[in-house]
Image (cartoon, rainbow, N blue to C red; front, side, top):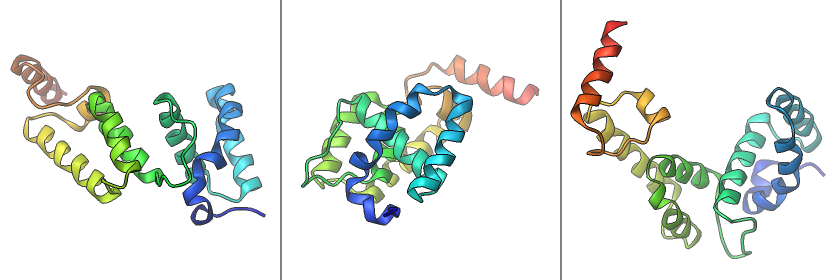
Length: 155
């Protein structure tokens, strides 16, 4: 029987783990075909599978390969923790612990991320800075920011 995302929401990590190694073994050009075939087989959308795989890879990089039966770790929460951790790596373990213990919700993570992005924008950083570099207020010198803004205007 094929699963829908709602049916496997509580056990998504165990569901996607058998597909991680075959996915990672493929070249980047072949991964789309693998996802398309797997999507038809398991009747989940391509996007859902990509989200599951990315979240599982993040957790695996943190040393988490299984979730205890009483632990709830939604994919959306893992995605938001990964986004925050890209900018603030020192917070990743604490955020994951808080999510698994039920101390932190998806909406609270969303607000943390939004607040932090607003602080970065107020400091004068572009959205390109969010993607390429860590963006923590007070960690860059003003000359770098001035040079960055100057290049953007010159285009």
